[in-house]
Length: 607
Image 1 (cartoon, rainbow, N blue to C red):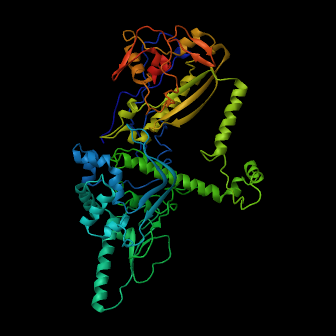
Image 2 (cartoon, rainbow, N blue to C red):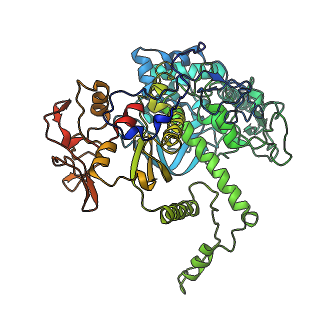
Image 3 (cartoon, rainbow, N blue to C red):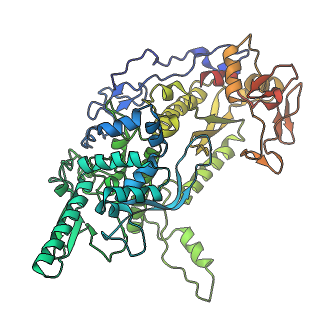
């Protein structure tokens, strides 16, 4: 990718008149919030950042490489075939990108399984979701059990044509022509494919030798090593098949944390998450050269602290998913990249849970009230028993104790400062210029959750800074917010604002100056008119709509026309929606002020 330059990134300049600027009508035009392109590169690893993304004077960052402490080898150059399939515009390339998860699963040496796989709830945008624990399995025997079809790595021990026929039967969307090309590519560049082919040849040779010498066949065992190349501190790329696996004939190999494959009579085996071969065996189309995954033995490039001198799971995957000025197979792999991110998050969370389980004493959580209450309320008699209880501390993100602590903090804020005055929803827009301009090739925003979340986080921080520091809606005494993810995968924040007494909204006039629920006049503000049409119209609900409940919209759209604002109508504010004849057309339907979601003109124009 060529070096990116842009004049879009502008310094943020605020003036003294920004106080209550979002409550001054009419709002005709506002300069939009734009952070430009990712053109700031980390001096240590080359990861790209936005101009205001926590930039340091020495252009070093902590998210990507911890200022040089984490150093991983770059992924190998993508094979020409794989690069063409990821970036080409013909039907074969489109087919591959559409069903890339199926192709990867059919060619993988190990499986990706979860307790619950969830179909994407949004038909227009693909989102990969799972429930429960993630498992990785591979076959422990070369030959499948009698009566069952070969799967996983067993397909690499049979004839190529027969293997691809089985793959097409197991994964119907796959085309055999594409599978033939991919299988040929992996046999040339992937060390795991080569070592499986080698074992196949060794088994055939030993069978012929036993038949010639008329003696029992000797057992051939393939062991996939947990070590990383020759030096665990340098993370060498596996350039040869014997660097990732070894073949033993006759005797059992040494007892180590290996993945072992026997000729027959072995069940499917689970792969440890900390085995460096888990990622390359599960995602051969992301790591065609067999680059190793995370293992707990990785050391920092230089040691700052004797207690924290190893690369953590979070640091490893943060380094891997950062965008750099080279072609990345990961970022171009669409749906498969989503699966990889979910797999990486589950692995990191499993390690955090394991740490909490092993360090209950150090975390000082044995005498918490929850344990006492659990024992007191345990059923008496019968076969019921308490068992061993592990408590997640409030420092564990997403735990019930942390959520309850946040809830108590929010209630304490409301008790001290009073009830909130504004409820604001800040939603991620996949068409933000910072997202669209930083997509490469045929990438879609739904396939780059890393980029979407980074842009959303920065914009949310600037939005809250506008509200609190620059007081565009008035002086803010306190605020609290929570971030959620929509069914289509986009984040949004619900923000509660408590204004200072002089800036509270106590009259209909003050409410009309802050919140609008009307279609703007196109002749006066065409930009605002288009934004309202694109983002603030609640389209007609159908039976498949998420807001459709018991035969009607649960948000009570369309609203009634109203000539003036009522501040307290059955506990809710009823905004002014005049019947002025302004309408917008979306699809085949026409909408008026009754279908407009309340908005602030200034904030809508800026963000």
